[in-house]
Amino acid sequence: MSRPAIATLGCFGCQTAILRAVLGRNLAVLPRRLQLPPALVSSQRRAQSTLEKRDDVPDTLLDDAPKAGATDEDQGATEKPWFLDIEPPRHARSLFAQKIPKAPQDAPSLLDPMIKYVYQDMGLDDLALFDLRQLDPPASLGPNLIMLFGTARSERHLHICSGRFARWLRRTFGVDASADGLIGAGELKTKLRRIRKKAKLLGNNSMIIPQGDNGLSTGWVCVKFTTSADKRHESTDFDEHGRMTGFGAGAVTGTRVVIQCMTEARRTELDLEGLWEGVLGRSIERRKKIEGFSPNYETDIQPLDNKDVFRHKQGHYKPQWNPRASSQIKTKQLQLSGACISQEMLEKLIAAVLRVESSLPETASQRLALLDQLLLTGHERGLSIWSTDMLVKLISMVVASPAYGPELQRTQKNLELLLVETMTSPLEQDQVFCLLEVYAMRRDWDRFWHTFHSPVRFQQDRWPALYEFAFSALAATGDARLCADALRWLLPEMLNEPRPMPLSTPLYSCLKACILAADPMAEDLLHNPPDTHGVRLSESRRLQRREFVRVLGEVEVLRRQWLDQEARSKL
Image (cartoon, rainbow, N blue to C red):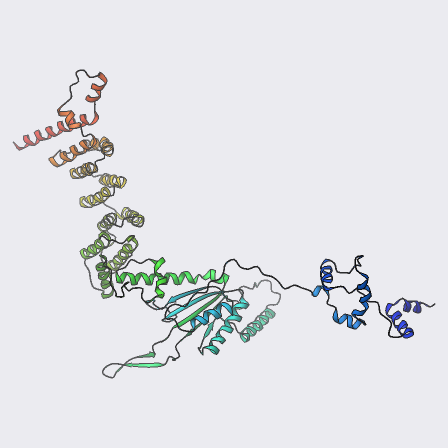
């Protein structure tokens, strides 16, 4: 046989055609692939790509196999390839359920369906609602502001859902919503065409490095609208004489609703929630100060949604009395009126702010805020704010404040550093006594002795009244250990002054009181020494060498010498 004939007989298709021509079309065609039940087919298709014959397949399946399809065309139409048998994806349920914010009280009726649409249809996550209708002054976006934040999954999702949302608002509620930052289909085509043109002009220039995203990715779309059906119109104002006093857009009515749609990265970068929380907190603080309340941001931001936040439980308003209210009102009047104030008046206002008693806890921040306002007002009026005398008074009032704590301690430290930097001459006596008094009241002995030595740092002698004040402050504590430690170095310094220190009656009384505070039995042991007969030698010597008994004896001798000198000088 020739080679073409052998090739023809070797082809399966040619053999089938010859057999059909000879035997007829009723010839049963053997299937190329064995038809099995769906369960067996699906399990074997996942395991292997080609079908292998198994010994446990019953013969009935082989007998019924030709009946599944008579022709190749019918078999190919009914058979589904294994690689198209794909199961739908199964996503794990989220452990954290999203919470949909509720519309605040007296909000527009469209707010609830709008929030539901934003969450369900738009697919925005991490919704946050801010009720800013009571901001004073109102925000730049408009009065009666309600703001909603949401996170989109991607840039594409952001622009598609924002455009659909704006159209849904127009179609459903008939409001004219505008979307800032939204890139439409026509604008996108224009920008892409410009980018292609620019890339064509640049060519292969390696010196030009493309930067930025060419305005194609914003990550932030702001959809805003007003619920009022009335449109703003131009208006003109006239006075009682019929003369025009102004013109412009009419008053805005209704509620301003703003939806901030952002990607997750953009939302984290901008942190608009933190910005508006700060604005809302400052607004609450101003309102509370005017009413005489103590602002608490953690509990007051949410109640702003309620119109009855400043009402009494019984239904009528009772303002809480606050001793700082008069200072707040006077400060506000001074700032608004621009009236001239004297240095004495400024100091009285500062003293009223810092030293007034209050039943409210943690008032240091409010006191410091008022102090800043007063100092700024005094500086604008040309008063002496950073002089040595003013700094000393500020330090004394801060330390003596009933709200003294960590915040006022930081303020005290800053004022003391400023005093050291600006002080070019020694402090006067009344300034030193002012600081010593408040330091002794707070038992801050490090600062007390630092101020006590301030004249020496300027090569000046200490005056007797300074020692008198120090001994009296130590004796007032009643602390024997503190008085003993101070007397061991303070009394020698007093006796070694360049000019002899006169032991006048006030100084002698304070010194004696300090010695008796260190050793209450010193005076009795000095004037009435115990009988040492029958007492051990060590105990007798201990009584004779008792430290402050000897110190008191020396002071008594110095006192008599000074009195003799005074008596001789009068003769």
